[in-house]
Image (cartoon, rainbow, N blue to C red):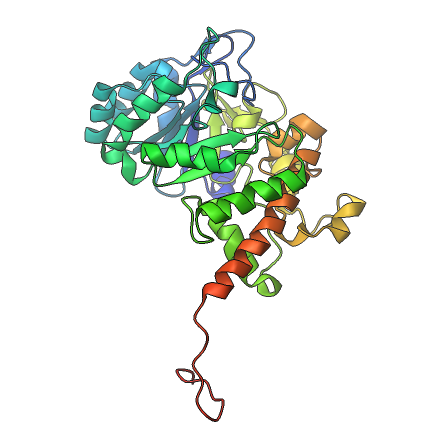
Length: 377
């Protein structure tokens, strides 16, 4: 197990991403763009596997350990969340679609230091286009009602509404407005880069968003950071990869298999070992993790010829939003899907306008009769 300890130290392991159920029937929803496999043999995590996963993390963590219940829908296996808290006092968090939230469960989480970090929902009627229940019914009314309960609790302090939008819908303002009306203080919309986008329509969507927020700050850290980068674009460094595949967090399947992240659960590509034997396959850390994390630096900085002249290249993390999704779409983590490129270019072009609008609002420097600027050394 010394090898496992060494690798955990190198990768900075602090968290396990728990998949308590996979396969057919593992989710109470049937979202059309879901990137997690929900077909095949149904597998559910046992309490014994859960306990062993916690023991594994305690043994190999290099920092303050935490558990994150991720999938496929953790509230379907509420008993395991209860069992985890009974077994350990480490930080527990989760991502949920909100369908199975109840007032009783929210109260229990508030009182037992279990945090809902991410609530996945798309906002308004557009939500019902892709986020449907297993029986095909729309889910917005159910999720919106439960989201209000969540936002009336302690959870509001750290929760983010995480939505997905596709190239079939460019009403980004409508999405934000629907989630703001529910009361979300933090909102994140991520494009489904597996599908097509049109950069001009993307640009217009972000320009409309800028007008909606009067060219100021938004509830989206992602948008705010891009605008800030473009406020002083010449000084901004080349964007680095934000994926961090295999860094800090490893995923655990219902049977105890360890994978680099959620995109490699139930596949052989990113399997690195299991919670009983530790790391038995180091190859993914190099073949996927290091290869992804050194993109734009030690590896060819221009994966496609058009990248060299791309107006958004400096703000490109290289592999898109997720290396695993890129692999699903292009079979190569280092080649971003076309939808990713189209979205990024449209966003950057709009955020340049946004940044200029913000600079116009900054107060002009005060100068004296000799032209010297007061307040500076």
